[in-house]
Length: 68
Image (cartoon, rainbow, N blue to C red; front, side):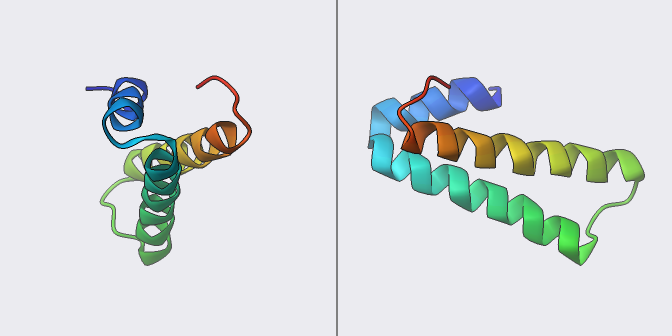
């Protein structure tokens, strides 16, 4: 399941407030993983940066009632 599909699932199952918190937690998880340098290859780091930014952006969009 891709991020956008999973996010829609979370919104429908748990509601908007939980979805915002989930997005923020996911972003922070990737941020802390990047800081700890827990990756074997530079491509892994790029993927983690993408994920961190994606979840952070979705949290902001949800807070502002913007489409995701």
